[in-house]
Length: 254
Image (tube, rainbow, N blue to C red; front, side, top):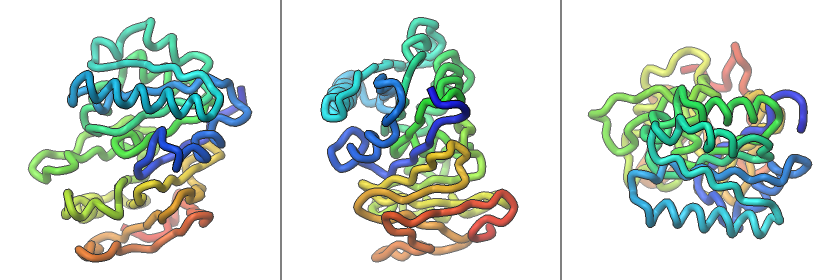
């Protein structure tokens, strides 16, 4: 295992699909061939949806030639299971897939399973989140479709980020979410929009230098920036571009 924290990936959409196979393959390359897949965010949608994610993850692991390790955590009782936490040991890549971000963060935060995930990442395993999983890795987790419900704490890996996945489509189903993300963001916080089938990856594990991968773009938003209904607003970063986040001088000040 590599010394120090492993790489991080935040994905706008496309987990376990062929379009993201290159990103997932690069994350696990040179690491143990254990691909831990955690579909907790989809648990409120029922067993059929959980099975969908497990099957999709197994197919991707087959494409990559690695072992799928499903960790089926459906509630906080299961997140406290020593047996489920033990499955994470020896992971090369740990992936939090999509669904409900508040449920995901609320279910894992402060549990044995989350402690095992964090310990594996800090020991060199790669850690990725897509959609709800990407949001939950920060410390600002909104009720995506409802401004009436307050944001909740996340898992705290990237407390200086606010993440907006599905950014190219988000305005159609959560038109005010970008404004909510930018409003009241503490100094030093960066709001990043990530388009579908697109990822930002930090190979250092520090969460300060990201490269864009995939077929679309990532975007840095400024405070108060209004999202036009017909086009994305912000500073675009196309595939291959590097986003550098300085601790004291973020690319745009909120």
